[in-house]
Length: 272
Image (cartoon, rainbow, N blue to C red; front, side, top):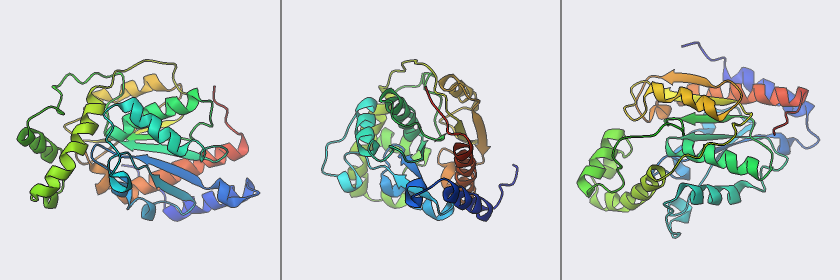
């Protein structure tokens, strides 16, 4: 793959653009909202911040029923989850540059969140980054997983790479995470695609070449969701390849958003 320019170079670009376009520099930091994969929580993206340029603030989203919100009931409907996320960020995105990233389930949530934001006529994200997820219009014809017997369900999660060995070997931890995973899979598997007008937003799709969950042929239909040309970038690895490539992923975030901010400074974007 083409080498990615150094983080330092894009950190300098960030700083230059922030200085040019800001009476209040703090407001011009770009927030990267990160939506979790099934079973994930805000801590899942704890290592991202160390791999991005300093003006980029990584903001992991916490969903109900996990992490700091463990006492809240789990949601099993994708749109209900998106409504929850929307209410978390709606005030913060007014007048502040931001982008959205989602992996696997998080990619679907990020797509639906963008629709929710635009329908509310709030400022659009600078860029959308999605990974580990087929395009929303592509129907998954495989049997649903959320209703599988416990042993089959946990084995499937294990094969996917979604639970580390220290959890799989601990029956109490398996019992703790199982309902979270089932709720998330139900939200994904019961989602029904509703085609709408495409965004006018740049979109990057990342894919693990050894990901048995998502075929490369299921990625190009993401183009149906935006009027701008999408970028599809493959990586070595399986479904959770992103965690094997954090330095490169972080540099791509930094590079892409530095350029996006530069364009915003020169000519502010408008979205219909």
